Length: 178
Image: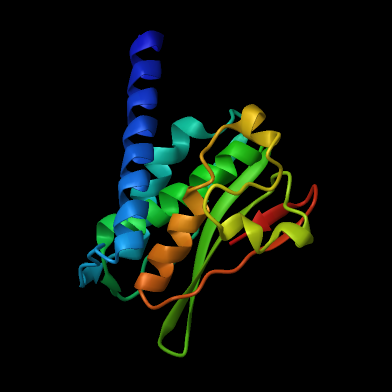
């Protein structure tokens, strides 16, 4: 049973990696299509949390703190799941204890979403570079934590393709919020 679970998790991670690489190539060519459909954000985050739960360490809780009464958004459900999968997946990678939470507030007809963790944090001088392709905070951490350095680049492009913006707040040793 444990071997099957490991195979399933590895397959899901490989599929996500392949999709990220294909999407990055499509974005570079300007060919990525963003659908406009009604999106139930709380349900999308539930799906992303379910996808990422196996990636979380045992003593890390992932919480969907979105209000259930939020009006539907216009966007591409699949791409929005991809955004959350990348953000929550990163948080799982760098959070060894504590929690990862997803919250949202409506401000002037726009939704502001925050994915926060109690992980290792990011030094302020690295904030800009983490959104560049194949960049990571500390390239030596690539061996320790894995990853291609494409996730946040893709997240930024997908958020912008939906007409949004993304930023980061972080303190070393105290966690990160995107």
